[in-house]
Image (cartoon, rainbow over all chains, first blue to last red; front, side):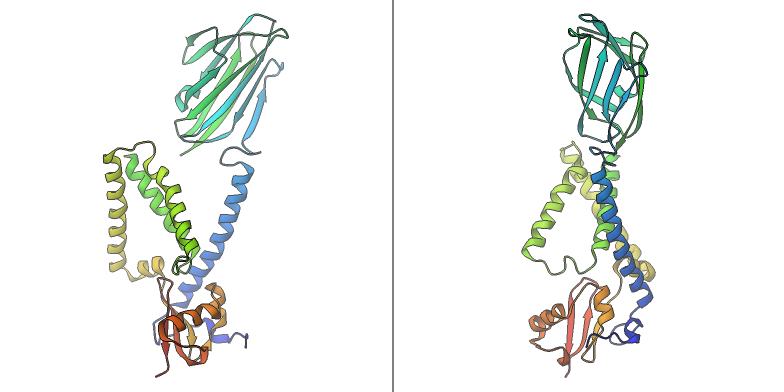
Length: 171
Length: 147
């Protein structure tokens, strides 16, 4: 009873005019579309669209004085953290410069701890943060993605340690 | 500007996704399908409006959506090819009391779906009483019994 007749997929003219080649293309499209959705879900889980192994990353300066944790991929309108770890002399204000497109692509919603002082530095900002007993200082930024596209940022310490990060914001 | 772009993008994405889902997916609306539709609507809403909740933005988005819809129907009216591309055509799934299994399989249907349509529309109980069953463009199954 389950056997398929060979003419199952031929076009009929009665009672309706069919276009089977077209209909088969539609079915194929549905099938391929289903695979495409699966691939998209897997990529999302992997972090291609923010928050996942592909997206969460960190860069370190060559001398290890500066380390930045960030998301490679972000979405317009979402808030994400950017953490900057600095190292220097104990109990001294460490000068950190953030330059590049960060301030154009993002709104800084929160900055913890509050820097001792801040100034503009060319296109970017310069922040002074007091280091602890071991000479470490950490700056937590909460950024709301505001732009769309790629944004390259350079973070550097006064002693020369520099990292570059590139972030992509989806619409 | 972005109101129009947002609405157009969402229209396109939803159209492609519902084409992938197939004509049958939401034709017979179960309770769960209704809930699913509402959730999809909720998820879409933010992307459509962004963070602009003004009356103007809402009007612009609605105007764009309706304009695209009318535009597509005008093109469909003029081009049979385009109409077939977007809406597909009707497909015969039962012919002279014989089920066309290969077609059913590809349309992700089974005999129970046909019998359900046959019972509710014509009071027919068996496949062999059906002269034609046709899967329509909107996903409903029309059943034509023997005279």
